[in-house]
Length: 141
Image 1 (cartoon, rainbow, N blue to C red):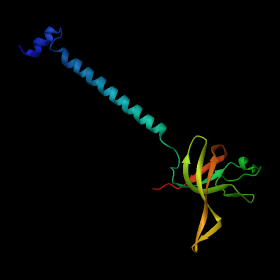
Image 2 (image 1 turned 45 degrees about the vertical axis):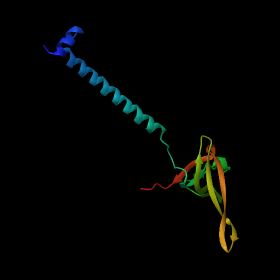
Image 3 (image 1 turned 135 degrees about the vertical axis):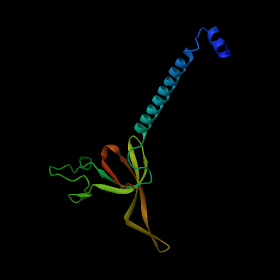
Image 4 (image 1 turned 60 degrees about the vertical axis):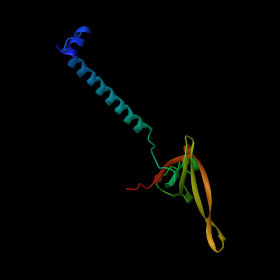
């Protein structure tokens, strides 16, 4: 008699029951690993950021009602000027949180000359999300 057969008989197991238990344990392990992978992928998909990342150059279109420009005539969401007023601002996205976005914007109308080199005033705009219609940005292929 082999030692494993004797040990199995002492433990109350037959020699043929071990392969069945091993196969069952392997199935359970595979099922648990697959479940962990599926849950991990689902969590990553749900929590991944949607939209532009900080440093992206983008254009923020404001809600027309937030600007007092709500009208009875239709206005395209991609229009930069409606009824002679600017309804968007372009700049570099600095940060995003639950309440607002922070955009860095160069004022090209105000130029200062330092050592003969024209420079533009740079402003940071805190824009509440409640006033944003959409954010347009280019996607790199």
